[in-house]
Image (cartoon, rainbow, N blue to C red):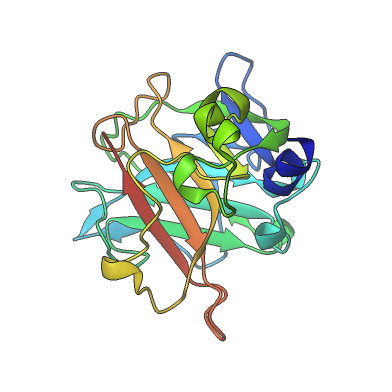
Length: 227
């Protein structure tokens, strides 16, 4: 059993959302708010309307970074404004901006997007062991483990970097028939949250993947599942 646990376990970072005093540093992690951008960038739009700020994640505050995010200092994510993305490219109904050097970033003037997402500060919590949902288990499981899998191996929810995705319906499909040209691999998730007043459909989870295909390592993909 212990050998099996060691094979499956992955470390992760989960973010606590709200419940503490907001930081003064504009580079800190936020839910429902994005404070910075690269010089020359502006607030992203989709269909001629400004998107809603979903979160800003500062990687420099983490004790450890997931391997696929080791070269990233800060991530900013925007969504909408009218529809959730369904197999659309980055920039259409969602926008993920990944910055490799936080020291080059500047303030992003806020936009009134009529967003219902609550702006709340976030802080990281290290997770030593995160285990896959049943659909992602990569090895054959003995019958005795199969029977009690969900009692023995916990998958952590929430806004989480690294670890394993918290699946709602099935394994992740990054594009129709799972044929995304960038061959993304999961790197983090954003869960629905009542505190932050954000839902992916009916209590769903959004998954973010980074490209692994040659020449497409800086391509990003978003998929989501709900009940």
